[in-house]
Image (cartoon, rainbow, N blue to C red):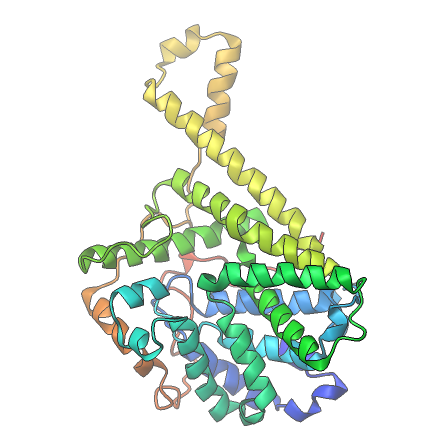
Length: 409
């Protein structure tokens, strides 16, 4: 649905692909994602793809799309004018392959392990460089027109490399400089030399895919909380491997305990304050049509803060000891209300929410250095519709089968 709509533009006829070939291409991409990885699997990719598609509609880079009877707005501004339909297609293509072959561990883990991939890519943006190389082979085989176009590959590679969170603050600094440039040019890109326009385009595309990559925190809270659970499980698996291999932790904030709701909530709030909120505020200053994301971020921040306070209150009440029926009966009305409120706000796990991380077997731990073999052209050759499931083995650990539409308030 997304690709045919994007390819509708007259400027993109060169990259037209038949429905059958498009299906084969998407199936090849799907098979290249590891089904044992809890978060960075094909479901995450669909989530990112849908987010970037909605962003492109919002900023007017794609034709308006009818959603539940209401057309998405088609605004424009100085920076949006720098982007072309070609850039939209390149971003959609990049989103589909931005995590190909992800092993479920981060760059720091591979570097600490001195894994062959880390050696191959000189410890710099290891996974992102690997995703680019592996995905290029999928494009070469299943969408040659996209692979052989130099500009398409360049923008795709630049965009995928931008998803390395190790480069986050570099991109934030460049975004600040872009804001100053826009202010100096009085909100117009007229007169920018081609080199400046190209650099601006690459930067904005990188920022957009970065927003899409972490857009789970800007979804409705029920959905965002599920993504947080799944990501915590993946981090917990890495923590288990670090202990098994006697490696120092390579996780920001240390390995999580999936059963510690307070730590989960605090980590989400911290991530939003340090990374997500400044990024979405910055891109909204450059592309005002992205401001719609800020409302849901604010709502989610408030909910996580509420849950943290409620959990702290609950822990304090347990530290004082549970109230017996007798003590409840002798409590004052205000004390009873406080007890009832704590019980209502006490975090509970839904029957479909994960409660324990699935540890990764030693065999899988040992297989991590051989990641390149998992997405070789030979491996991608046989396309069995039921093979290579992109979702975790236990589907209850991730959001529902259908990725919900991005929030449009």
